[in-house]
Length: 182
Image (cartoon, rainbow, N blue to C red; front, side):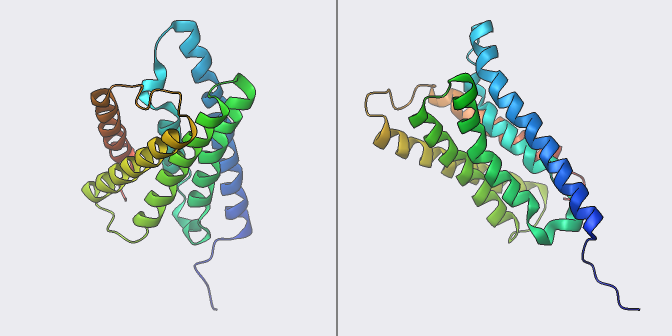
């Protein structure tokens, strides 16, 4: 009897439902963060909440049996664009121009990480380097677009040291939460 390593239709369907549930929860959280920030007067945006939610998606939608279908990559790319846009439409934050900058940043992070991860070894330090590089390139895209689109705004609103610590913490958190077999 000839068998393949292809996932069955049920595995793919279950994985799609799981991805949809994760996305719905993360989109809801993306809408809650600006509201919580206003209610508590805490600058939660300095923690890069949408980046953390994108990383959560990369961690939670991780079924190796359907890796050939690139579900995780496609899901992360879709979520990267959807989070800022849905938050803008539902809550009114961020502004349209800033939502575009954020979507480009998150799309870059998801795309670059997914591209590099499929080509480089899976040890934890390599994963840390991949995520850190993806985040830094994403930040570069964000600030380049912000400079082009939002000329009246202050280019760097969050102190650089705060951003550097948040980026390092996010990359380290991602690696610490990776499953053991990664």
